[in-house]
Length: 285
Image (tube, rainbow, N blue to C red; front, side, top):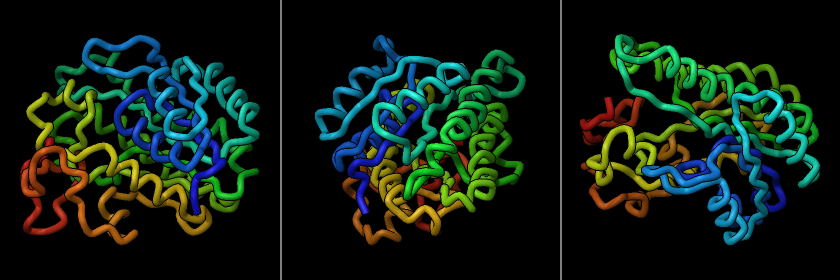
């Protein structure tokens, strides 16, 4: 199965993992609608909704850049309607937009707390909810949310509790929709990286020193592609980790995803346990 002719509506996607997923789908000839506010380049975060749309077209897909705020109900409803009208329906929702602040509970402002929850969990719920009727009419409908497995081990809350709550909120969207929409044949899954992924946003928050301890965004794009091309009625309610998905698909050489370092140099991402005794001990936490 491929994504040729499929229509994806994605929150964010101007850069990083979201853009990589969009470009992987575009190589099949997919239609991709991007919902983002990024009309002007950020000083430390290169890429806009327009540069991403141009890259999608160049890769062989069809792009529909929709400028607005994922927190705005009217914008999201209009964007969904415009996407369905432009491409004849919607097959896939990718909840990619996410705000991050790693401040402790003592230091995080409530404005930042609200921002993270409004974009991350509420934004994911709103976009998926707004697409249900279109997804129900699709022959292989997926909602893919970039959020971690839910684990209530207290150690994951030892730092950045506000951010953890916001990301787990996205994962609860997956948990709920997978059961609620199962009978409609709509799959709902989450995907998360095992290791740090080198994106401008991560470098901006964590620092440039993480670059050689990261994998390229293409590993998430390839894993997302594998999930989105699976039969939706047979693949729902999962919290996937990128390299597990690719191993199941037969990938054995992950060196193509290295970002200048070695496998032993990789840093584990948030909320991820080592796979075995030889996994790196370096962690973002």
